[in-house]
Each structure stands twice: as structure tokens, then as C-alpha cells.
Length: 248
Image (cartoon, rainbow, N blue to C red):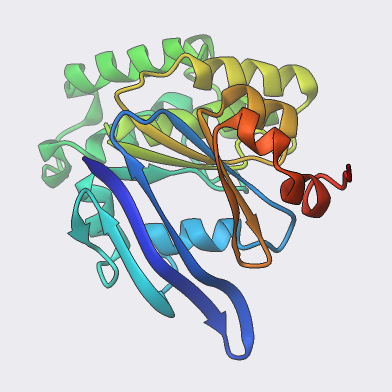
């Protein structure tokens, strides 16, 4: 079963072409797909079109075999897709556990019960505890967002992505701005995530990308330069020349 398929996808802003004729699919249970490419290759633009934050100029997008090309973002989320962003996107007026509870409530029928206190939803608290313990953030559940390190904010954002019980998660440069130690810790968490959830990740750190990937898609100048297993990408002469700056 395909969880994602894009067909001849294109995006232009006037005469500026960002993406052109991009086609690929991701199958259920395929593992971690990592998208790499130079700055300006169109990686985040691709994510923004998949999630509906940008309109498509050309082509089609399918999620779980449904044509979602013209579907709004919130309806795509209901199908089972979630994402994180390059810039940390959290509720800064709420503490850690409140952020998770808000995400959990959005995916629960109790979201329509606006006058009932959150403290009465013991099942949501149990779910929040499980998620925060997995991300090693339970001890900081009452911390304000400003009291977290950048790496902890990244882990919390990843927690919110999984609070929606998604079938497909898009991670946009999850290790951006992290120290080497923080990057390795986050990579270990990603590596340990259930294979039941398909993961597509944009990553600028090549060491992390090749360690985590089951499959790598290389974007360059708005198109797909290569698509394959990490070992095949390492040996691809065109990738080495254009992206990695190496020549035989």
C-alpha cells in the first residue's frame, strides 16, 4: 500500500521555478526515507506542498491512495499525516505537558467538550506520560518552553508529531541547530521509533542522514537527482559531483 505518491509535482513563484517534474512514492512499512540536497533544492517546498501549506503549481499528490492535491491542511492531518518544522513551533505560553495534552486532545473526541477541565481526562495524561517518557522529557513536564534547551524543544516537537497517532510523519531538519551530542541523542530516538509509522525526513547532516536512512532521495535544482539505498547513493558519481563535491 502506498502512503504517499507525488506525480510530476511542480512549484513556481512567477518565473522562479522551485520544483519541476518530481515523482516518487513511499510504501507502507518501507522504513525511513531521507531527503537530502543543497540549499535551495526545494526540500521544504516539497514538504509544504505535501501537507497543503503551499498550493501545487503542477502535478498531483496522493495520501493513502486519496488525491489530496486540493485538500486543506487540516483534512490531510485527519487522514494521518503530521510534520515538524525547521523552526521550532510550540505553544510557548504553555508548559511541556500542556503542549502534549493540547496535541492529544486535538486527536480525541473530547476536543468538542470545551468546558470540561483538562485535569479530568486521565487517559490523555497517561498517553502524555508515555510519550514524554519515551522522549526522556517526563522529568521536565512542568517546565515552561523557555526553560528547555534547543535540543529538548526539538524532542518536544517530535513528541507532538507523534501525539496525533499518525501513519506518516514528515520531519524537516530535526537536528538543525543541535550540538553533536544532541543530534546523536535525537537520532537514537528516531532510530528507535516504531516501523509501523512511515517517516520521511529532510536532513542536512550527512552523517545522521546516512545512519538513519533506509532510502535516500537526492534533490538538486528542483528535481530528483537520485533515489536509492544509502550505499547506492554513496557510490553514485553524479551525486558525488553535484552534491558532495567529489570527483573520481
